[in-house]
Length: 431
Image 1: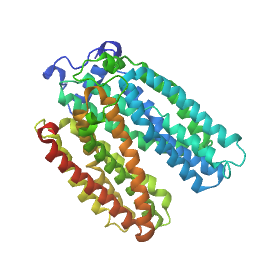
Image 2: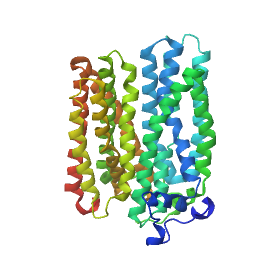
Image 3: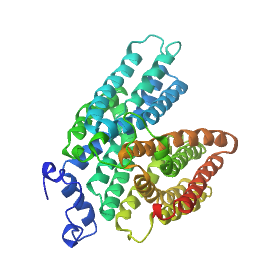
Image 4: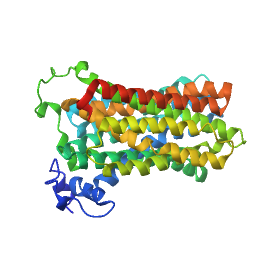
């Protein structure tokens, strides 16, 4: 196993023969540190944790300090909207200027934004009333500046595994699993710190992680594998500083697919909240939702072992069809135990679907806009989640948890239609 400094200088595995594939169930995953260096995965995992903490953290902090659930919810929404709006811009700048510079600036700006929200809550008088706009602006800025570690890590993996699709799928499977685990651990960490000390401590931890881990990720030797677009050769380059949107059109289907996945997430969260509320246990929604993430993370890892002849379009179609079928199962349980089983089943196709959609997005993205497209995929999840939560909220109010789960099923159906459209329109380009 090589060190991070030496392995990161290679853009791809040296060979694709048996010597590069250690035996054993997780042999392919042991290959990843040889390619990127031993520190890349732990640093990247910790660097993306603040994003998973801040939405729930804002909800907890603002609600506790103001006594207003409405203001806390709006602050959490502002963080999500800011993150979704800022992600494509960061991806574009990373493509044009290089990841290291953009991530270092984002880490500093984000830490200051976190401090700004804490200062507003602590020192702005009456922020729950006339000063609510200041709180929401601070939360929005915190989301806008959040470093996009997950999408940019995928860009590095695409460069390091260029020409080796099986190793690429292994890397993307790992990244999806890392995302799932952080979004399970992040809210849990916020709740633990708030319960043991105070809600502000989660923000302090997020700021420290941002300054240290995001900076370490920015400076990791793998950043050299994805230099600025100006320094990379590609056919038909756009004019400097001008984004040719037409070049991104083929990647629109995967982006819409991720938005549908986000809508499924948001609707499912609302459905579980309504389901728990029917037992006077609405607070259990987070624990139930974590089950979805656990089974999803497990099956995301399995994609590395799927055969190459299993085309990506068919992976998406079958995963989306399974998601639709399993989501309909959520309508059946009337007690917690069957719901646990239904959630574990519903999570099974989520991981493979996300890995596949990210792979398709990478295939269809222009080489010099890979960071932009990866960030747009991440934004699609956030915006879709907000839309799904909004639609499911009204449905749950009118028809209970079944109404919210029907919205989730509608999102799964939309994803299935998009997968069929991708197969129809793109043909072999997606395979």
